[in-house]
Image 1: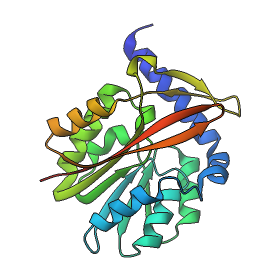
Image 2 (image 1 turned 45 degrees about the vertical axis):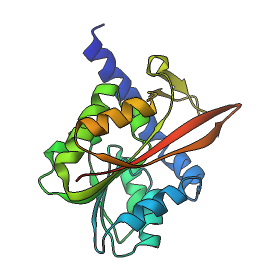
Image 3 (image 1 turned 90 degrees about the vertical axis):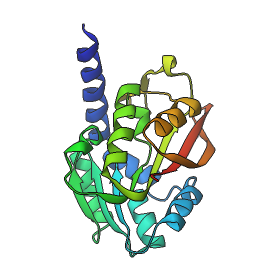
Image 4 (image 1 turned 180 degrees about the vertical axis):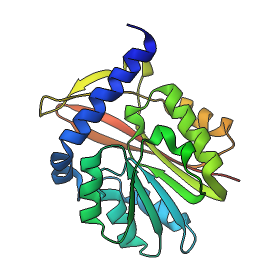
Length: 215
């Protein structure tokens, strides 16, 4: 099996899992507050009436938090799973939603003041992560913000993981050093680097949150 076919199969299985477990994810994370202070930092940096592109919005949990803190924001929230989008619409009737694979944001024709990508990077390869950062720089207005979060770890240990439902996702690990280098390479200034401990069963992952700005 060729490398391209392997990657496509990883994304296909991951997509099917997220679309299938949309309701379960909503029940678990809709009011989860571990990352709220990082969203607060993001909100405080945004200008009034800022336009925000949210990637991998899931059931709209982050969208809802942002609009609670900053109802003036103009948010376009996107996800590649139709079931996630339907839940997000129900949870955020005032926001705008679009079915979109974050690997294809270069197809969007308008710019934004900020892009927020909450825990999509664990499902993106190093190459796709690199492209996402490059595309984000091009889509952002001057002074625009980029929020990224990932699971910190050794990239070579990436692989399929099975959740409580028995469904699988291919999970990629990213290092703080590599992500900052990618952001710097495309012109971003990293404003914040925050780490959170997340318990996953008997294990504890380190979640990395980076906020960068386009000069």
